Image (cartoon, rainbow, N blue to C red; front, side, top):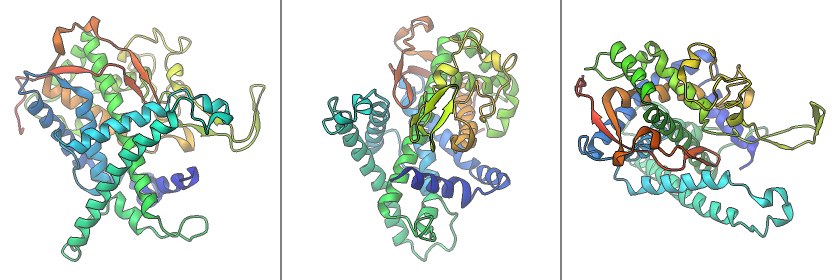
Length: 400
């Protein structure tokens, strides 16, 4: 599927069909607030069950993945797709991660086109294998949804449209846009939305938890803020996040130090041009190194130190693309279309785990002994998955 076709589809899903104006975009996000809350509540319950009520260590990133996958599943199909014991979920998690890892791996064939057919590093072959496996799982979810709708045809008078409905019902002019989307195109879009939506969210939240456990003083500050601003006997709600500036600063600092897409999505020059004395030919692939921008000592004091306070004091920047020293979601017409959704999910998911549980590193590891090595791919992941023991905070009561 070509780039322009994908842009058109994303515009239909995220810009035209529902979200033509800022007001409608906000309205749609508000309508989906209950879905976000339920997926995060389920994650909290999954974690408590898996940890045997605070006695077993868990793979923290795995549960962020489940939450993200079910959130995308509800937006696409209006239903949860996975639970912690799901075999399909584990397989998709594995294959999706491999796709992102291989896609960001340096490939000699990118620099020497004559080697593309030979695939000397086997990157294309391996990527194709994992794409096909993940593609099969995404296709299974679509077929299951269509079969259910076929059986329920006529039994449900009115149902709120989800993203799959929009794709299935789309009719274009057949000139500047397709007359309709083929089953394969729909399958590709669903696959890409799951890949993009789950991997970036999972890696960001895992890095946030890792940095907090690596910096106990920062962890104490955000927990103190949560427990002074929010009744300890009640769960954290989306509306509460505005009362938690330090929590939001933690999310920003995580995005600065560990941007989910260290080079953003590849861009291409539409025409030849000159910039800063350099000639850039038409159709040159362009990568923006936001990882390096976020660590530039000319802009950031102590750039390698995890210090959320900077966003409350010296750098009151947001990530909406207007402050070019901090663009984890990109900027301009090609910035991440899911940024408004991410800005709601990230602080609520992170805050919910910190509000509900006290966290202890697994295997007796001390904070200063944590392995904070990065694994570079299209997404920036921890080389060593974060393992920790969640113990329910004594002041928190279920169901309040």
